[in-house]
Image 1 (tube, rainbow, N blue to C red):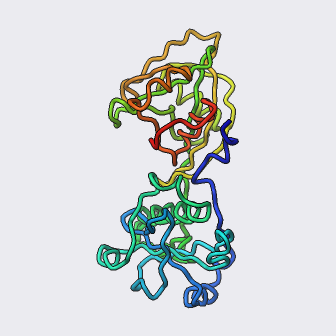
Image 2 (image 1 turned 90 degrees about the vertical axis):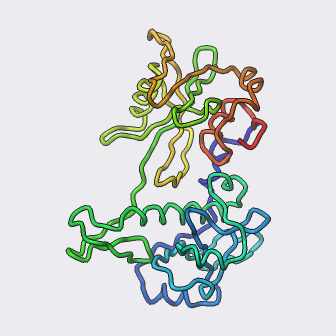
Image 3 (image 1 turned 90 degrees about the horizontal axis):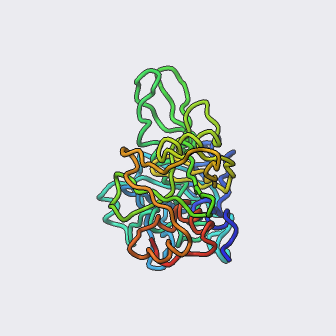
Length: 309
């Protein structure tokens, strides 16, 4: 049998004490960054440096020329057999020239996340989410003034009025819809190749609960009315700044339901029994193992499905 749902979420794992109180202490931060124990996770174009064994490759502060953006990620609390246990970790966003001088491979979190340790998954996810937030908040929405990072990279300041901007996360629901025969509904998005299918998903709107978002998104994308949304679990998805909240839901047996793709986001919908889904692989492409969609599909299926994608 498959593991419990929360244990199947690669990017929800962590082995880091975020040490949030130290972010407020500039002197303590500088002492940490100057210490021999300090580690740096460099980020380049949304990728992180790794070794050949699917582990993050840390560098020292001296290996990185002064970066315009240093983010304090916290202290390692799960050091994988005590390796670097307790060490302070910073991330630094670097340019092409610096990246070319570092040894290792540059890897994407989407494809690597499920192969990382809890420590490395937590660090990479946190660092990427913060880097993406900084990349889109260089100017104040209040005054238009250029903002600057403060408090270990966890705040941006508008110098014209002193106001503080804090990181934001956009919640989105993703739904495993089943019918009276316990078949699973999968859809093909207009932006994907025709043989890729996943669960229905969408962002939560202002003033809306997760459960209401489940019902609305499924109705909008498939024309189906669903009932009994049940929370499964959540994981961060920093592409660029989301948290994915997974639910299961059943098709309303009292409604006149016919699965009809909206024709804009979803071009095709298909119902699958467990036997039909296995028979469709590997020609049918499912979400990658790092995603919560893959975890929800396998949760319904009852065990891991073959293939990395």
